[in-house]
Image 1 (cartoon, rainbow over the protein chains, first blue to last red):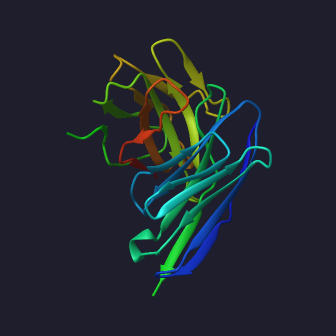
Image 2: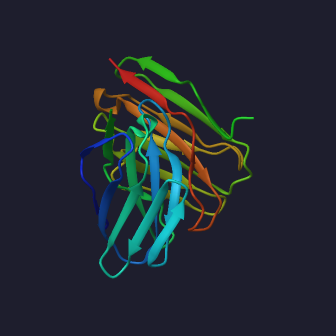
Image 3: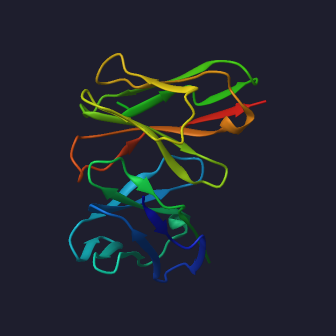
Length: 109
Length: 113
């Protein structure tokens, strides 16, 4: 099976940088995804990593270390609208994407 | 021009009833999914289906069954509804390759009373 772990809640200040960590254990690793979900809405795709290293996309970056079973999502220049849940999800083989329990991020003024 | 649409958005029903949730995607994707998100916001896979294979999460009760009339639709039928079935159900679709992200519908909030 798969085990995905991420913090339940985080709080950060507007304009700051926040790093949301995700650790996972799986066999047949085939990629790691990050999704954003605002309250009452559907999850939306943020990033995909399958090779080690950092993928940057505007204010958001995602990092992967396959040997450590570790990823993080980095959010820069935080805005109030970034308050949401951030879901780490792992693809193993051809099985459907398995999600972690999500990290609820609160951005405060 | 909604990509993944599901209906209804809200569904309130009594225990023991049978209900269906419809899902359609116009993205030309090969694979469709149903996920359940409980009150703690944990998103859990229920089914995935393409024209070759149905993958069922073994923890899903057999009261739940997916029905796919064609590649663009994957409906969810639920028999003998129970209180514990109350949750938000998300339909999603993707291309049939591991790197393809999921595109989610807006969810159906099911409340069983």
